[in-house]
Length: 481
Image (cartoon, rainbow, N blue to C red; front, side, top):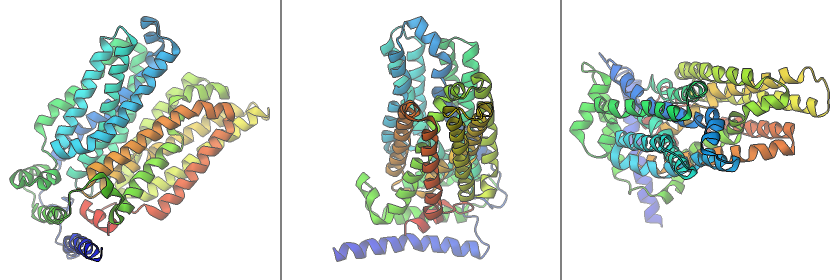
């Protein structure tokens, strides 16, 4: 046991050595370590690659937003009972959990572009199954396939963007993932009112087509190519991403040093995630997903119309306002992430979510006890809008950004799959229990969510590091000491 401990200590020291060299270069003013300050660089290929990747995020939103505007039409056309339609709606999250479990190893085996193609293929198959459906079982198969694609996209998109982006753009570009999800949900809701449910399924194919076609024109992740030993392709991909005139020697050397060090470690297995050297990054990644989902977001999102109805406010006006605010604030959060920093943004966000929960709880408390009934609807809508606005500016996007940054590349597949699985399990549990909690106590439900989000603030303060302006290798070396 002592010999094993010495070997692990030497290997961990080996990881720190290249990181210390990079940090020395940066301190001496010599480093363009992550491309953020590469001389003569032009990031247009990074922008194009990000656009292609976030088509998957938009597709995610299309899948998530499909069931709400189509419920009555599908039930009428196919004579589905409420229970049958409930299965159709909820099976999406089970597909997403399967996608979350399996996409990590697929991403490591086929590359980031290969995983994006697999994700799109499942969504295409899902939409076609839904479009041609005449029975409940084919609807469910299509929805399950869509869910798999969603779960896969939720992991591979932020990982791909984080690995190709310069450090000065990484947070902003990775946060576009959440913005495009919001856009997909909102657009599907609006279009779904205007077209048939079969036509809406065909429209869902468009972002998949753009993603699959666009992948032919963008490079693979340089870090994945380096990990696979494809050194010539690694250099070509990195040069394309930073611009033909950019000096990428420092960044290339840093990545190669880091990969060579990781290659000296044993091949990672799922149980390796629970080793002490990885424990902090795993706790941070999984903990942020718990904070994001168990704070009530999917309960509020799935049943916002019913919340407004119960509070005595117009559900149509409230829902439209909710959708617009979500997109606008998510965009603001993406724009300021690399300036404000990840940690301050998520702390402000979680604090606002607590306030929104408390305002909504007060509203339902007044209604239950028949106090100040004229103020109840305004208080409720204010609380919900504060909740979703606060969530969108930080809690929605930052956990995915941090998750894509903190895991060493040798465990990124397994760790990312675990974090994404926890996220989708939380999404299912929250949406499943929301109506039961509201039946128990409407104001008690939001007090419970407020308490969970208050604990999230404490978790972020104690555990989550600031990753702004640091290379992936620096972040991972600091966390996994």
